[in-house]
Image (tube, rainbow, N blue to C red; front, top):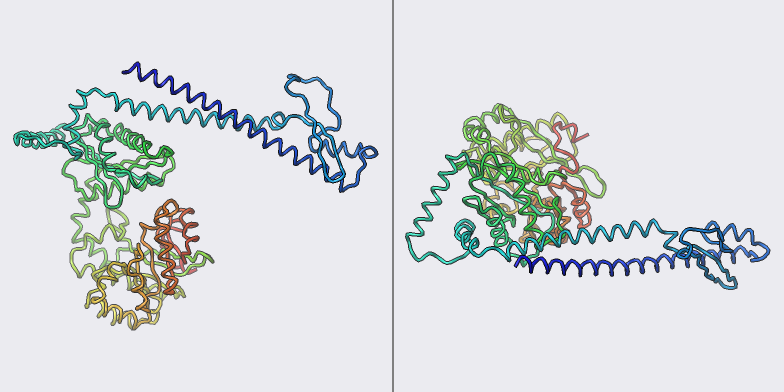
Length: 574
């Protein structure tokens, strides 16, 4: 089988080389024809110039000779000997324009434009070599799977069935099932005693795969075969469309090796359906951890690692080890976090919102950061899950509003300040009674805007009556946040208090590469225009995303592409 495979490869290689040479010849013929047409156009323009100047071909011969020499032509062939003169004879051609007929001599186009011929031929040859290289890799991978030892295939089948959930025959004997369960438990115990670690990975590809492809099944098979030496592997398709991969029982001394091997395996598997991908188009985030680690923290660390890999132009895989410190500190900070808020141990940052047409600042969003004594600055997403009681959640939004009002009193601004309230507070009677008492008497209350997620605004209208009435009483406004579809958008026409909508990050991120996201945003913009509601983009990170949003008609946008959140209020209002 190996000899037959080699003969087939040699035959295909000869066919490939022959096809490349044929294409190269055709390419050079076409290039020569194009350059010859360029010479013809230049000569005709020269004849037109002589006609317009009313030059006589005999009387004004010296002037005409200077003109044609400047364009690379000659009136008479140069008899000076040259190397390869048989191949480089000067060509003659007659150029006509109205009553002027001009016979000129010139070097062959491939001689004059030799640098262009050489450069383009090198590019074509390089492309052919590159194509052969990837073709050879794909053939090698195919042969590796096609000519695999049947006995080995039988040996690996239980591993694929048990760990990757690929359908196979179920053992008739219940004892076999029990034995498999015992072996699985023993393998995990073995990992604990042998200083083994597990890998959890998320990966991102720059360009979408064909929708007809079953990515989960494809990568299950590839990962299982690529890591047959490990006791267990797992591949799952996430609701977001991404893939999560788990490798169990990785040796402590081989962590770096498996990190890079994982990226290489994913990259090679991706080439099967997207041959145009390069290594930089596949980004992988990895977290290595021990059995028993908090899976929520593992997932968050992996997402963080993936984001760091995506932001780096040269580092395509990034690994973050699971660190018990941050998880344990936050877990035991349940009683401390409310104290940080009550003692004003936090900072407000301001994220400006820029109008895309004029570049002017329209408003800014207040973002809270707690100054933790050991973990540094914590964002709202990091510490809010650790606020356990309703009063703690209420105190958080009260602290933000009071801080914003104090800043507006000391540094008046014509721009609105947007505050994202916690879901609980939108429905809390106690919160809005406080709001009426404190914010209702504030002279700059009309500069306040309050953000609510689209899902909560649409689904909980019966609970929002008090909130809407209080915001209306201060001449404030509501911004509907995290809009990701056209569903129920017409519902906003009933609420004059709503002054704009913010698109969700999931439809903004990577929109320049996704026609589906562009279609969704275009529909939202058209519908919002009919409702006289501006549409804002959130989380804009690249120039390509910004240009795409401008073409789609977005009114304004915010994100790290424009600026990081500003700490000083004067930086925002100046």
